[in-house]
Length: 187
Image (tube, rainbow, N blue to C red; front, side):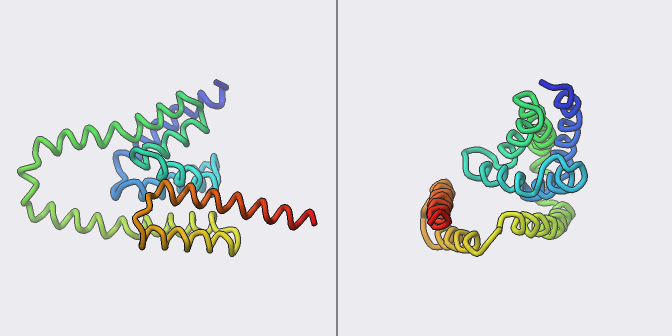
């Protein structure tokens, strides 16, 4: 591990710990926070890399944000970075959920809690949409990308095909397109 990677470890842990404590709305809102912190502010990764992490993280078993955290941490600081990012993102929600479990019956029918959660959900939607717009711009390089995206959306909405298979099909179509294009360029 390089000195630069070692210096990144506490930053990765603190930042992912903060994400785990204060980001509501699930994996996509955390992706928005990663985009803001590590793409825009620190410039450690690009929008394209974040889109790649998110794509892979959604395509393998497990929680998308845990997977994305591991991928990010590994890229920035190797296996230890992966573990540090994962621990940072997981510790707060686990501790919070332990607390919620103990008071669940009290909160379950509380009208104030229900109203607060309604407000949290409404506030999270624009955060998720802003990240989606930025990632969409990063991922859509040409007309062919739009065609793959539309095909994948159609498969998601109208078939029972698994997301993993859709991603594999997208990769295969992308590889086939590149091969055909490079052969045309050689002729």
